[in-house]
Length: 327
Image 1 (cartoon, helix red, strand yellow):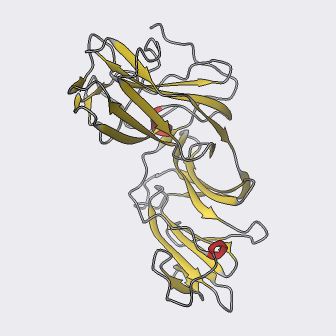
Image 2: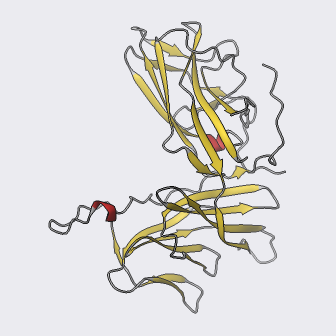
Image 3: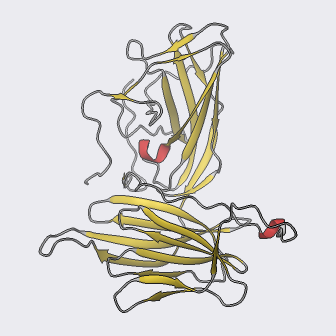
């Protein structure tokens, strides 16, 4: 199966600000003392398969001295241990990595956020236990965070369409399967968009588009270039519009109020798609005094348009396991 994730040719240094790779090959000995604290935080416990799984790691130096964190004699100074609840380890996509050394001053803390979906094959449905760990050569020991448990699940399919990728005439550019999914939680229902190349086994994105009212069906239209337009009703009299390219890049996001008529998507004769009706507004703007809405009616801040995400290769079929590498 082809993979569109960027490979790691040879051994190259990865900037810590961009990515912290991880390996389950380390001897996870636990903390030898409290001279370094490692904290791991993940905002949610339930994720839809292939969506970004952002983990924030905070490392605090309590040694009283400046500390150099660096790979030494094959021991990686930073890593994750991920395993299923029955103890099956999940190896990283690429264990041949290096991380730039970093110095941490006495009493200083550093924090980094990484997307574990790009680093580990976490596509099988089920629960996973995650722990971050730091090796300090000067202290000859490992320092680990308390474990966190997350669950990978799948949403309910609302709409799906396979389309071609526009390109020069006579050039085969492949296809993309577009899926609109809903995921019901105890307090809300989330809407997701997934774009994938099924024959190649590549997932280009799984975007969480925000809340939507479950009894209100989201609208979705494709324009002449197969760019995706979605209009969802997130709370009464409020809608979210999203425009997303076939590469997974978010091209536009807007929030609209609908004091009277419900807005809708409309296609023009030239194949373009636009929103008809509704009043655009900025959910982050300070409300006008005297018109502050109730807390239950305040909109959730929307993400700004962002670069196309790194495509993620599909994981192994459920039920198959990967033999643990020899340490």
